[in-house]
Image (cartoon, rainbow, N blue to C red; front, side, top):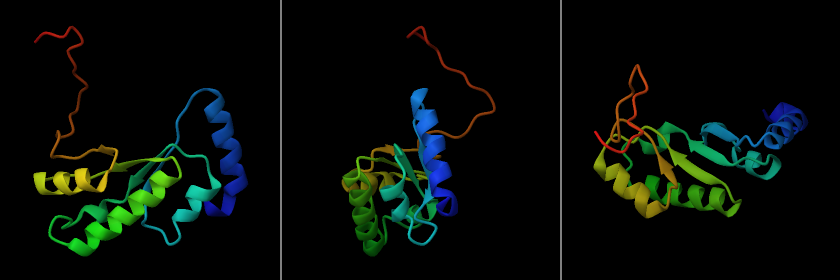
Length: 121
């Protein structure tokens, strides 16, 4: 995307005209990922799942994640943590201030979409 920043800006501008919100995935995996925050008007950042590996057991990772999350949110962008698989990681993410989470800890993927919209089971 960095090689085609102007094209990406134009695409995002068009998508925002039709009320789309934009997310960048695997954030933090590539070097200098933070330049995307400065150059593109994105709404969400999905952090790379490598941030969550052994998160609860490694204070250094927690500190790094806190710093990255603050930097992203300082740009007015919401953060999403993926691959959340245990309560300990969830507790850390809550403390760090991550906006949204997804992963097996919440619910396993399903082959079908089934939701009861009536409000009763």
